[in-house]
Structures are given as C-alpha cells and as structure tokens.
Amino acid sequence: MPQATSLFTDVESKVVGTSAVVIYSPSGKKRNRFPEGVVEIYASEADALAHADPEKSRHAALASGPSRSSEGFKLFYLVRWLD
Image (tube, rainbow, N blue to C red; front, side, top):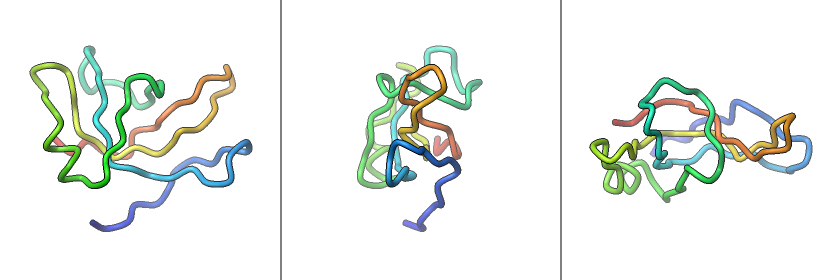
C-alpha cells in the first residue's frame, strides 16, 4: 500500500498518522471530519474495504488522525474515500 502523508498535526501528539479506516456515517459521504467514536482503524486498505458495508452506512476511507479539535474532541480527517 502506498504511504499517504498526514494532512494535519496535533500539538498534543508526537505523531498523527494516516490510516485505512471504516467510518460509520449515516449522513453519507458529505462530511470531512469524524469523531473517533465512529472510526475503526484497519491494517490495510484491503482490510478496510472488506469490513465496509455501505448499506449499513459503514464506508472505507483513508483518514488522518486522531487529532484533538479546538473543542477538545479527538477527530479523524478524511483523506479520501475508498469505496
């Protein structure tokens, strides 16, 4: 898998990485940031795609994070959708 670069930095964390994830998003693919509670991290894009289920609002993606927001939440930022 080609290595994607992180888009955001977090002053509280030494490293914010980019990972293959599945995001639970009932509103579809309209948002660009997601709270950590709706994001599952996987080892590879293939694993994320295998666990995705768009009919149940579970979409595979590459995301950067977690990064602490100004409101104090840990967020993941969308890099790109995989499905």
